Amino acid sequence: MMNSDGAPKCLGECASTSEKCFHSSKSIQHLLDNNKKWREELVKREPKIFDRTAEGQHPSYLWIGCADSRVPAEEITGLDPGEMFCHRNVANLVVTNDINVLSVVQYAVENLMVKDIIVCGHYGCGGVKAAMENKHIGLLDTWLRTVRDVHRKHQVELDALPTEEARYRRMVELNVKQQCLNIFKTNVVQHRLGRPTNRTSTASLNAYPDDEPMMGKAHQRRNMILDLADGLEKEPGMIRIHYMARMLKREAKLFTPEEVDEAIEAIKGQMEDPESSLMPVKSLIDYFAAEKPKETA
Image (cartoon, rainbow, N blue to C red):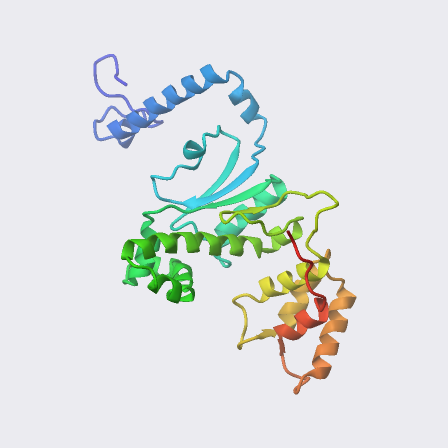
């Protein structure tokens, strides 16, 4: 924009006439022009869209994708504003100690009541490639540890592939599958009616008809115990009793406080050292989830 004297005028709030003002940047102006054009085209196609979105959002999907600028979620799926709740990070990861992604998942599942969660990876992912090369890359080393774990887990399969490109593409696919599993094991997803599906890139949270098999309570309990213990074992297969008792009692839909206390006393009675502060995770699973999970289609 220009003042009456022809000097550039700030597009922001500082009202500066300096050419060095950040708000007068041509790149920012380009974005503002594009935004105006996008809005006009969208309103022309759907006149009431902004009235609708102003009332609140009701997305059907949660999208967890890569931060790569070449994979814009709404554009590649052809969805309008308000139809997809999105979270993006390097290599589309669902890390169990990442409060950011877990908060997004909780809000999407519990508040927005999304029907499906989509984990979208893409060939050419720089994060996956960096993890495979195992080079020191600074702060990302810690973040990509999850991808490196997937690589080690499938090392034999990957090494059997004929080319580096084939290994790279397969690793992208394996990473997506692992993140789907990570999503499904979270507390919030376990609380919703659900079961694994045959789709490799999504975890469905739809309610199923009465004649279709659902995840049994024993299976839900087992998954909850494993989820709570994940990454917090003080020794291989051992978890702190006080921590596990406190966390299980919070899961009121699956455990009563009395059941938790009885289970711990029973397990401690079978331990070599009843005074130990640690207990076997397997013993807790055997106590609460002794029955085999129901088979799903």
